Image 1 (cartoon, one colour):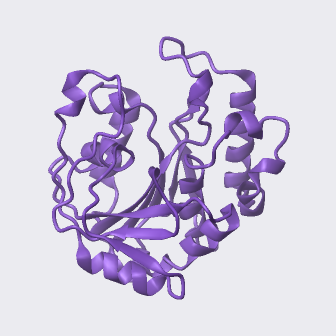
Image 2: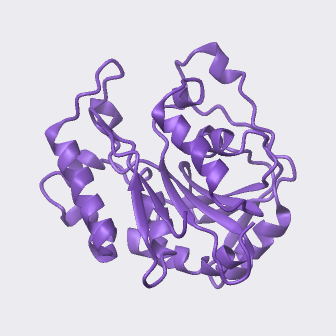
Length: 261
C-alpha cells in the first residue's frame, strides 16, 4: 500500500473486447503486471464506460455481483465470476467528496465488464474492494473533468481511481477478424496521446474540435469519458506513461498510467 506522502497512481485502461479475460495476450499480461508492480491499493474506484446514468451514482453493495453485460460471446465468458467485495465506506467517502453534486446510492448494482475484465487480471484473488462511479450522460465532458478533480484526496487515502474505456471506439466499423487500423483511428489515437504527454488537457476535454477524425473515432462519448478521470487527477510535475499502444481497425487499446510506477 502507498505510504504517507506518496499518492497511489491512477489509471486509464483500454479494455477492448471481453474476450481479453480468456485470452493470453499482451493486453492481459500488462494488466497482470500492473497488479504485481503498482502499490497495492486499499480499494479501487472504477469509472467504466458501461455504466451510464442520468445523474451520478455510486455502488454500495457489500458483495457486488458479476454483471455479464454483453451478447454473442463464448459460454465460458458467462461463467466468469469476480467476487471482489464492495466498500460502503468508500461509497460514503465519494459522496462526501463530490458535494454539492448529488450522488445517488445504488446498493444493488454489481460490477460490469468494464471493471471486472481488467481487475480480474490485476487482482485475480478478488481481495481488493471495488466501488463503481457512474457516468452521468447528461453532463458535458468538462463537468466530468471537474467532478474527477474532487476525487483527488482518494489518491492519498490508498484508493486506485481507474478509468476503463477506449480512446477510439467505433464498434459499427470494428472487425474482429482484422487488426489493421483505419488511418483515421490511428490519427485520432496519436493526437490524443500527443496531448496527454504534453499535458494539454483542455484539448482532450474538447476532443470534438480535433477534426476531421473525432466524429468517427468517438461517435458516442461513453468509452472516451473515463480517460478524463485520471487526467483530472494528474498533479503538477507528475509523469504520465502511455502503454498498450495498439489500434485494431476502429478500437484503440491505448492506456495511461499517471504517477509513480
